[in-house]
Length: 62
Image (cartoon, helix red, strand yellow):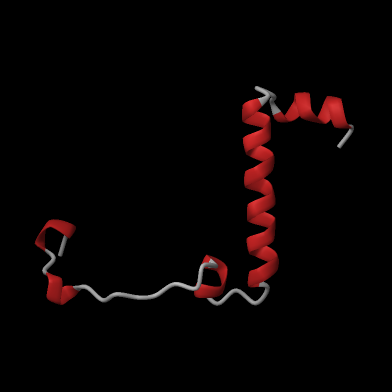
């Protein structure tokens, strides 16, 4: 059955916890979520500054 053929009776509403890692049963869900948030913030900063990963490495030494 594809999406166009689905009826309301075929759908189930599932409440999520706000942490996709917890929802999928990862053992270190909090840590995984924190890592993802930090990575997203770093990517946003690099994009704002128009820096590549190599440029950031040169500037920070990391």
